Length: 148
View (spheres, rainbow, N blue to C red):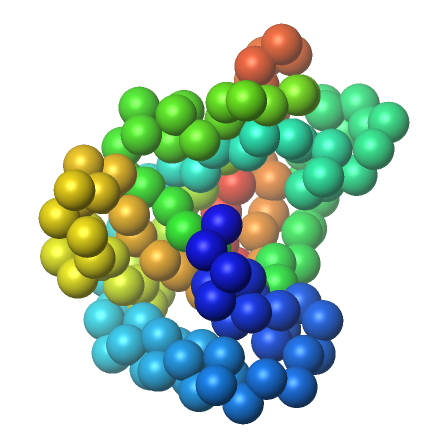
């Protein structure tokens, strides 16, 4: 992950006192807020290590019904294939499928970022919570969630 982006994420994750990163987070939040979805969408996020995200020694099926507090921005993709690319190298990897509701703010990064990375079809969102709806599979689980 780009070091500056990590600084931006740390503003929320660690209450970092980083004025430059906080200013960028404010700009990104404003852009996200100004772009409500015209319809619900499904986005994907590859997880290299499901235990880092949800906790160690966990029975993956126990996630169903859990409310997960998210801290920071969430980079996702409208492409399942692109998201799968972000699970490797990973142990244990998983794929997060996120249903984002109508009118939820988003930033379509593919139009703004590096043209060589446009194939990733990145959508940046800033949810406060995810509700885990379902978990399918064990070796390479697909975790379905909804933004709340």
